[in-house]
Structures are given as C-alpha cells and as structure tokens.
Image (tube, rainbow, N blue to C red; front, side, top):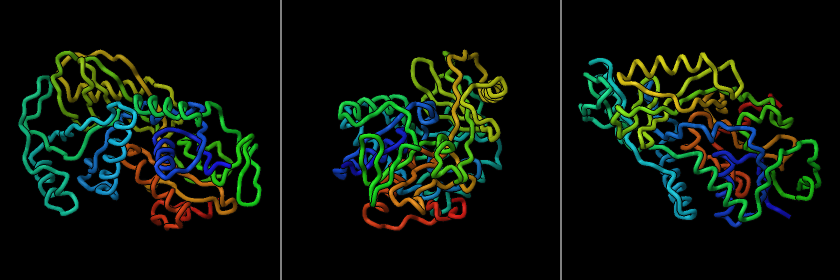
Length: 348
C-alpha cells in the first residue's frame, strides 16, 4: 500500500512529492499535462508587492524555504534552475521615490528594499528618476525544472502520464483505492483543473489568465529584472521573457489578440528599441479572491486533501505550503487559518 497518490505535478505537486521523498513516504503521481500555468510562468520570486510597496504574506519564511528547496533539487538533479537576479522597480516620479523610502523604513520591508537609488543607464530604457532595487529576488526556470523533475519521477517509476478519473476512487475504511493503487491519502494539486474535481470544485478558485511574450531585442542590454506595469526578464542571447496580463473573465489557455496588443503597448512604454515577438504564451493561474492558498482535508472524506491556489507566487509558496500540508496530515499540526479550506467549509 502507498502512502500517497498525488494528482497534478506543477509546482505544487512537485513540492509535495519532494517533501514525501525527504520523509521516506511512498507515492505515485498522475499528470495529464492539461494545465500549463506552472510551465509557462515567469517564475519570478519577489517578497514585495511593488504595486503597493507592501510585504508578501509570510515572505521571510517562504523565501528561506524556497532557496533551500530549489538548491537541494539543483544538487540532486545536477541542473541549474534558480537564477538570483535583482529586481529593479523603475520610478516614474519623485513621489514614487519618496514612497519607496517610506516603505524601506518599515521593519517588515527593510530586509527587502535597498535604500540606494540606482541610476545605472540601460540602453533602450529611459529612467530619469532611477530604480529601486528589491533584494532576495530571482527567477526559477519553471520549464526546465518541471521537465527535469518529471524525468526524475519517471526514473523512480512513480509517474503516470494519464488523466485521473475521479469516479474510480473507492473508499475503504481509512484508505482509498484507485485502479491498482491502494493509498492512505490522495492529494489534489491540479491548479485550475480543480474545477473538474467533484470533491473540491465548489471551493472559490477563481483563476486568472495571464499572457506573456518571449521577445528578441538585440539592443536591450539588460542584466537585471525590470518591473513596472510588466516585468522584463533577461534570459541571455538577446532573449527576454515579458509579462504578464491579468484577465479574470477568459479561462482558456489560448493567446489572444487583446493580450498581445496590451503587452506590445506596455513594452513600448518602457523600451525605446525594436523587438521581435518569438513566442506568445498563455495560461490560467490558480488564484483565490482572498489571495491565500487552499490547503486542507475534505470534510466528509478524510483521505482526500488539496494543495492549490498558489496563484502568481507559486515559486515562493510551493515549498512552504507543501511542508505545511504534510505536517498537517502526518503530524496533526494545525494549518494557518488563512490558508485552511475550513474558511470555506460552507462550500461543500
């Protein structure tokens, strides 16, 4: 008998699988590649909400755990996926500079906001008011990360490339049976695919569509991540990832002309150089209206659990939330009330 069945292997599912491996638990993963938000994501991790100059919830712990988690994966798989790069917030006025300094005085933000205005000249970017530097930032190459970890799971013979069929779950005493597998627990980490899950579909997973570009810009000499109304992330060889849009109505993962137009206009507001669109990508982020993940156990089926709703901050959240759910299931450690699905218990 297995300890766990994991459904979904984006950032959340992989973080939970690795947590199980580190704790000598047995499992199998089901992944049908139906959700692509982890794969096409920008992959940025940033402890500050730059729109409001406020700290991300639980940022210190999340950053610390994420740094150690991805370093362990890199060491184990002999790959590089975590790239430490500063994020520069472009200032558009003296007032924005002042707001930055006021924020950097706050004890929660002081470790993450440099108090030195950066006046470095970047070809193709006009920034007369300079930049503010966010510390402890970077990006995860999510596509390489997912491909490498999926290959690793396949080498362990614990990866199944099939759609999970919910109606095949059988409940027996304190276990579940699914086809040939008997397990103590099932953890659903399906991202926006949760809407097809009859056990958790009533939870308020909103879903926010994001579109982004891969562009070629030979005249853009950028060695940091620029963040304004969009991010510009240097990948090397004159390639940059640029995004992202936010659409709360469209729940498809198809690129749109409206998304393309919005991104082109925003790029032209920041860059004064030519660029070529190499790829146009889209995905639906698993977001929740209260901006907190969805963790916990089904009220009627104690063997069924959820790890979802990581939204735009999956890279930062996944390691910490995976450990929290594991400790909750295995050790009875209470979940933080702000992420526990008990806050939506009337949904079931």
